[in-house]
Image (cartoon, rainbow, N blue to C red; front, side):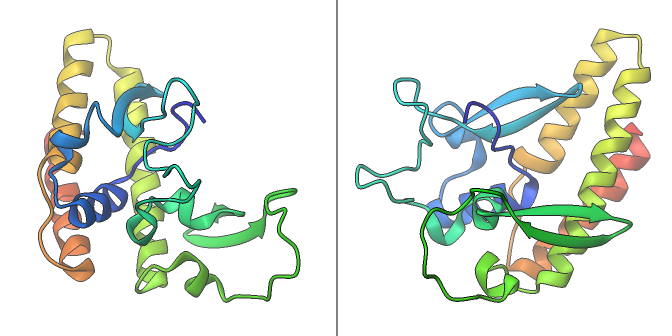
Length: 183
């Protein structure tokens, strides 16, 4: 999987809440950073010897299933965003297990208030596109670095408090402050 399981703030909030550890402690052991279209983004770390997820147990099962990242929640579904509308589809050859019954998407993904989560995902994608354009237009490597560090501190390194409603409210405030200061 390499560095393909990119973590968004909701993923980090869930993981840190579920593991009881701040994100800074997860870096290096089960999360790493890489550059995605000019933006430094966290992702799940894979074990070098097996290229499997750091959270995969010896029995082959997810050890953080209750608070796993969104991309893991989706599998074997894919997701497409169109003008703040989210569509889901089954990934070809995504699930080899047969004879399963149909499950509603909100139950499958297991995220409280799925419409609000989908709205958040659309807003987050928009912020990332704006940030990527801002960094690409910046000729100073030092400014690019500083914007990236501010981005990481604002959305990942500073803990979120409370439940999902509090998370969304806090993220909206952080997004406004970040946009005013860095975009």
